[in-house]
Image 1: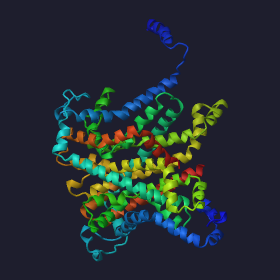
Image 2: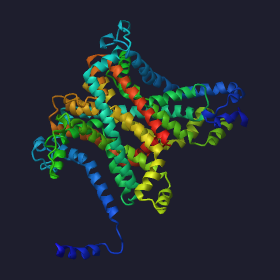
Image 3: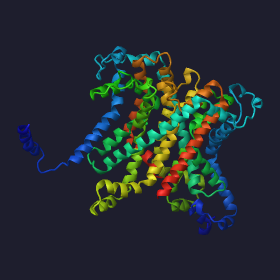
Length: 291
Length: 317
């Protein structure tokens, strides 16, 4: 024992010469890396599992790396389970909601931020209140309403309730409020009407906020579950999360290969989008907290 | 309209608007109101129809005996007062779901906040290299669909699944997470923490970055330990951020729904039924009045918890 310590002691010191690395920092990095592994392990398991044949997924003991990788799960998902259609449905709903929110919420946000008008405080108070109302509160009457409008099980029924969001108005108003009033006033003095000011002065300056709103709306709609679950009654109107959830709780619930491939299909597009635009995702979330 | 004085109100915030200025604006004010409402009209129309109206409709449904059969014939619905609410609290499944929701919130929120604050502090202080990389990687679970995540975690939690094999490396034989009523809730909480903690982390990180590091350093120079400086300087300055995080997490944790839907169907023995899941089930049975009442219990809980958090954080400020 004593021999070992005396020999490793100097050697250990040799390895870190003048540049001192504090132990605290090493512990910190160690903990962060451990946390990182815990955070990413479920993703790794999901991606690796989706290219395993079912037999390998349920094999015991299970291994991380697929021994005979195959895309059979994905092929089956697309050909027999219609996941291609659900993918299109999800995309259509999310994109429509993004466009609606960008246009309508920026218009309302401009009015809230830069125009004094009767009823503004009441209306904005309602917007703020709705931010804390959970979706489960409104889905029953919403279901009745949309069904009575004849929009049950339709794309319009999926989209309309989320075409504008109180969150969208809130975030646009916060951002537009920070645009100097002098710019708006100068345009007014030059004789520009409000719609001209909105289109020519406000919108170009609001691009970062619009980007944030677009990303967060897309994210929320891509992952939205309760409403599509309630309103989409036949398979041709399922969105990806609905299809996956019903698939996993139904008779196919034990086909692990298909389920993992389904999960990959839901998660991959949004992860790719996130990796490409991560700065905006993270900044968007951070901003909702600060302001 | 063209003089500087008449334009002045536009510069004011709504909270500082003076009644005297209203009369000075005269017809310009009316015109401005019309223009503003025109700008708001698409939003107001959709928001009123699909946002505000259902909230009140849900409230009124909660005091009636409306079922799925009454939807076409609204006049057959009877006012029943608070009967739905008393029925809820007589239903052991609902009481269980309320307790489960409280459990989820009471354990999940502090756990998420402590972990996310710890990571935020670590990323803010000690780490220069790879900071952005860590931030992105830790945030990744936030953007994933909760349904997809729940599907994946269902298999991670199997008795011979990945989580138990990791535990067995440490010599622990893990439970049958999702089929053991004692472990089903901890399992869901663990997954929720994994998925959610990226949001408070980036908000805390932003909050920390707005605190001048000199304040913390000054305390350390004055002889305070790093921990003491963190507790007495950094934490109090983070109070507004902490409030926002607490409220955001309360709103989302109180609504948990997808996890029991996909992973446990509320079981075993109702151990993971949440209020949202209960409301969804009652909707499925056609009991719209009961479902609405359950959702209003949730609204009340969210409002009370937000108010409580405001009180706590205000009182200490």
